[in-house]
Length: 215
Length: 215
Image (cartoon, rainbow over all chains, first blue to last red):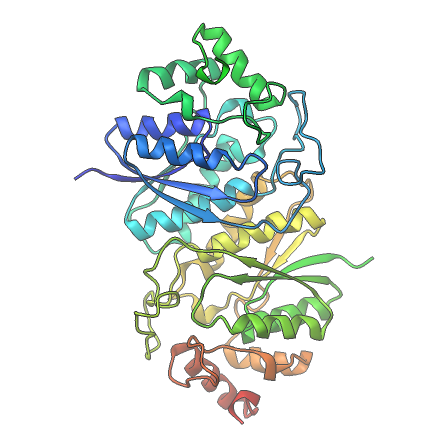
């Protein structure tokens, strides 16, 4: 029987590649998708399409964060156009702690002992909840509060991979890149200007691979 | 200016006493209440009444857990009538991790550096996410993923207090006990049979104080 894994799936390049990575390694994948009134809610449709491409079960969780400080949630705030070296306005307080907690609870329920997510080195500076130290400590903590005897392992396989390597890996794994969505704005096409678009474009350019969203 | 605190408030005896404890110590309290389709959803009304009795701001968060294993969520399952020495069927996977994560995110947003919750020694055996070790480790972990510079302190002031002491403390602090709700069943009156009712009744009996809900 295949081992089960819960995969946090936003619909972006990193989480889609993480899902395929786990799938190709033989895990039976359960995608966990969050609808938290993010501006780029259309990423949820991407997550559904990507999941169905490998017949992964999908669970969408609706969650209303009780805060408006983030430009990713508040349409009155401007999405930055520069890549920040400090914590950007798109930061959502405790987001990964919340998502990982729910993922671990879900994992326990379906008897999965792995939780995968797409945290990546590029995000370190900006998002403290993507740092390796945080992930390790959080894994220790959450397991102390669980019923399950086999510890839940939280893994971020792309953690130390440069973005262009992720692009190459995604192609190698057969990720349907045309379904992915990275842009922080929720438009019909990627804006090309937000940090997420810029990082993605730069990575594709480095590899010489054509981004199907740019066609 | 009073220090701000986020208080996880279920509407039960312990969390109501915790709220009053923080309030009487001078904190400006922000109640955080979860509507997670629990059977005893009526506890939410208790939480609202208790909060308004000290003019605490209240935020109710709707959250759908993607699992049905717990008898606290699934009406087809029986609520136990015995007090369990192991993990009871009312256990909800990762509940405190999820609630505390959201509370810490909220705390960061409103610039509160304290999060209080009503975990108690009585719950140790049954709920691993009420244990002191878990709370300490979780506090360490979540702070590594936050933006805020001042560490968020997670405190459970009733952690080592026997239940009858909590009853005495609640009276001393002036908690409106008539508003509190402990019963796992969501009936009009407490069922008197579930573990939560039994523990409450025993505690009141030990103190000789009349439980207003039993009148």
